[in-house]
Image (cartoon, rainbow, N blue to C red; front, side):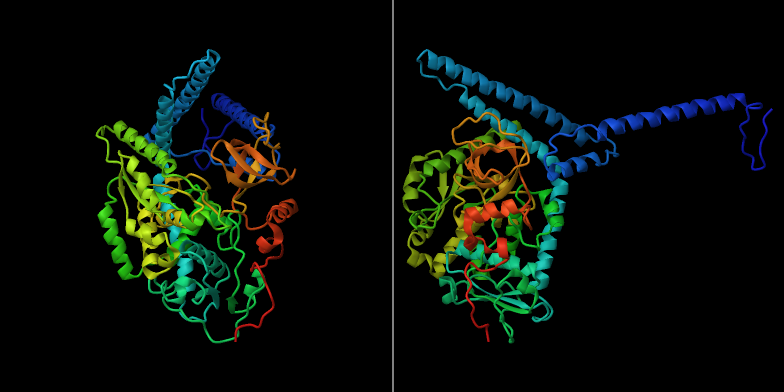
Length: 581
């Protein structure tokens, strides 16, 4: 018989309910087995040796992976499609490597026999690589939705922060930072102002421009061309103005005037306004967070006045950017002769190699979609050298668009520094930013600006749509990135390759686009080439990682060039002067 308690629930008793107790025992044993299984998994997963425990950074990344939550949502069709594409890509990479080895073997055999190697497989290698790129882009497209949402949200946060400071309810609400416009070209001016806007935003100041220094500002050319940064506060307030010596000084007073050339933070470092949290957000949708950040600063600075905007729209309509087009920017003239520049002469043919590759890949993608007719190969050409237009005549398969009169005015500094010359530069940079792909030399400030202008109008990462035939995007002549060594260096393949050990810090100087970086090892103090796959870029720094890094940067670039690094100094040169009255 079965006995119930007062609440109507069944009780378990060895005498009265042997069957029920047996089931309870079985459940208990099963629970015990499950618990032991989970304990075994825990031991295997969390107590085994982890790869590369060489740095705190590596340990932190492992901990993030270790504690990540397992997927709870059901598998969707998109998940299946992504997995299929990933597996296909893995196979195709393996096949591509086998093709490369077969090509090298064939070349070796031909060399031994003294025959000229017929380069029959090279087009196949090139096409295979393009196919791999298309597959990688297809896989990346699965994340476009949430990445664009996050990009839009983060851009609005930055815009709101800048607008709050630049257009306050009262002009004395936050204090003011009165800055001079740098005496240099238009691209240099805009990047200098972006740097100063970073300072103003980091220390809660409204930025006001002093317009007497630049040739564009002396004749009010720039103020007649671009809208002011602030709609409400365009004149300095009355009061005691102080010239800050260190960044910390900016917290001690409300009115500051920076008269001297500032020591802008190198590309490997960021200002306090670009917080760790925001960096993490940007890193999730952009390949170059610093480039994205500068683009947002430029967006607040670059606002053409209505008449200029009409001219921009007119020229854009004549080009028709609704069809595929590649922008090519060839910077020469004074860029090749001035002692502090980094550019060298490069013929148009070097640029056109990359234009051809982009169109070949575009046609291959369209063929994969069933669109077999090939598009017209159009190039928007911008330059400050009229000889470039003569070089373009040999490329008969391409239609070149552009404005020779702009080139003629840009070739002479006297006409370049006029209102018409400035408007020409702005129009050229804007039209280059509207192209599907950009080929240029990123030692040019205008080339960099074209990319930034494009990014400021797009939610997706446009830095993949850029090909520089020399330097990467970023500050030239300074530390571009701080890198962490992931793998010990293998047998050197060249005499000037330096030794790396897991956990070393590298200061990147240049990417040579041949599988090698050039930089300096902080630990060994050796400078030389090292393989690109053996390091990982660290986030742009707010503070120094260690004293060795600081010492090496000072040794490489000098205290004069980076005074903010050791003593938090703002200006490249500082002499005691009276404050503004």
